[in-house]
Length: 295
Length: 220
Image 1: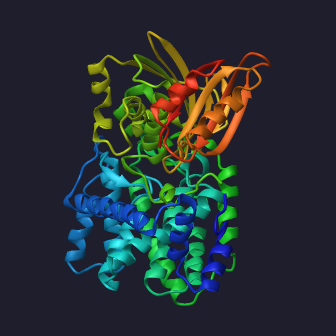
Image 2: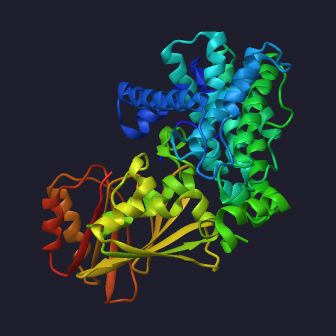
Image 3: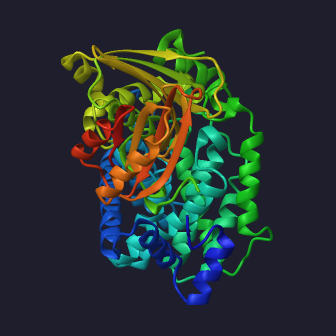
């Protein structure tokens, strides 16, 4: 397979050399690999963006999962923002609320777009639709946001993992948060190198995060992990835009994530046998939902 | 390279809650149905690893049945697939296995009807992407990302050339090909990934070639 980049270093070097955005390199690679036109590829991503918009809208109206474990928190946050008393900032909380909205819809078996997975589907759209209000991007720039996220996700998926069962939550929400951070930086006018720094700073702070869903449901703690993934992405993007860099290069952080995932105990990799799933309350919830079928 | 497209990462559009356990599971079911070539009458679904531990919470069961009924990852009917299966007379059974497989999200689907049966093992590798790892006991690696042909044949000289010739005549380009056999001189399998969807008439033509036992296809 003849790809344009295999790792973040190659991606940034290529973008710098050709004086292009990371989203542009991703679009060119997709054209090359799939043989499809730029327009076809843009149209497909536009559709994905629409699905994300609709999921956020639906979540902000308030949904409830079948188990009743999650739902309604996105609304609580929006109401809180409206009071004008938020401490961590309206944009940050708006991103958190919209990330939560998406994952609440996902938990309710609603329609979402996996970014990069369903369990981590809130972070990229959550940050996008919050940053949108500040940066006023065009539709094309919003679509590009998803290509930039896709470029970093592509590297992680091929060099490490984006599966909770294979690498823990760091591989899912960790990857999603890094992808979002890189996209925020590009939309805000940062350089490709700053995108990579934002990704690295984010993922460093997600390393080791386990996948321990209560009762095996993509609800607790997944919804709130998306909330913090969105917050993490925004802070890391600001740090990178401020000129802060990661002492450990981005590709090495991804390598560390992979090795941590490999050595992680299987009880902590989406089996619902460890972590929060194995707490007294976690077990009680599982018993209530499935009877004695789940141990 | 396991992931080749940006839409493997930003996508698929799907019914929640899990890309690997719901969307991936639906895709494994759908590939199994494609390879079988029709809606089965019955299916036994063996689940391994994380699939076995958490399938109920993730809707892995309804997703696989949805796939067997030809529903796509975003088809709302996935949620009520058990009822749809009942309506058309598809009986099924889920077996949570304790054995460890190489990949944590593995499903083995044995499906059939009055005229035949087939066994397919699929793995869900993350983000909704899947691979077929075994068909009727043959180890293979099929990503489902490209249209593909599976040809079961007697292990005789010339079989592979004949099938390749037939594809060439229809101007179908082979992107990737694997051949394997259970034992020399007995049954063998060709897995052929091609660049475009394959017409039913090409399938029929291949199945008429001497020593070919069965031809299945996956369109993309």
